[in-house]
Image 1: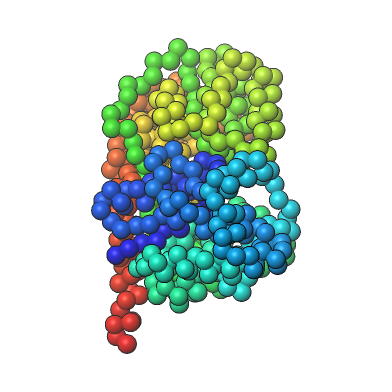
Image 2 (image 1 turned 30 degrees about the vertical axis):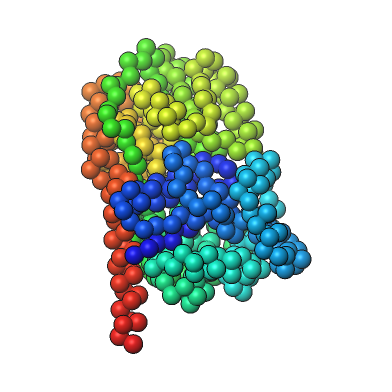
Length: 434
């Protein structure tokens, strides 16, 4: 059985979905399974070996130009190949701003969901041409924005279609009207063409079924898998208690809340500091400036460090240098990958009691939760774990053990492959009866 796995590139940024998709494909290949990882929009960016194909389909430049001008719907393939060159896409995404008009985002999303009836039929045909050469037995779409392609792909390729539920609610539900309503209607309609969905947490499976009118019995849950270090490092012997944060630098992830909590701890005479890493987009640089100002005015001069966006080795080094890990997300998190990464290195976590975090903390026993509606919730939770070394060590050990038992990339790959086999067999049975 061969799987064509489509991964949506994130414009040159480290993206949790890209990291997960690439690790899944890499692990399947290591297991001797037949999978082809095809990037859409832009090349993917990962902190491990990139196993994706060099070509990019639904290239971001081509999609945009075809959306705004009919001329580019008829350009020859050699022009499209130049526009879709990975090097050009990386350069454009590095130099372009991150903001788009509400109308452009809305109409572009609706057009993508319309599939063959939208403005990007040319890109769909190019994808079909590639997939006909790949000859997959199962096609995995990267997120709900692509469910409009399912019917045409199934007709052209003769393979069932699976769709990953990737935390797209923040984008889709944030669209301006009337595009939000149009997008949700199309997802409910076109989602019926998809043979199965894969969510990464029970929380998001339930949420997506309700928010996007999907059948709950067609959603499987495959928890995120990671590659923990082979050997567990000794807990850091920090003279100053160190709190870690590693994910995207943006308001939604709540770094400002963590800075305020650390400032409050220091005002009460506690010795602590904050180490931060993660991707910073151009549009979020003012937010980081704001966070740094809050750190200075809150008395964190010399106690706040941003190490920037790093590779995997830098991420692991940061995790091993901290006593506790926290991402106090403002919006409910759909996946919780940073939490699993921290627990895999034996670092206990403190997280809000919202989104996927309660599920992950309960399943691993590796952290404590706080009430995000309590102004002192985060500060009190950090105080508790700061004051109890035995608790920290126990939570870190239990979290690490749970990750090794249930959240490795091998387990993730096995579960996904079982779903592919089941869906492929279910799609083949009716054909055999005919």
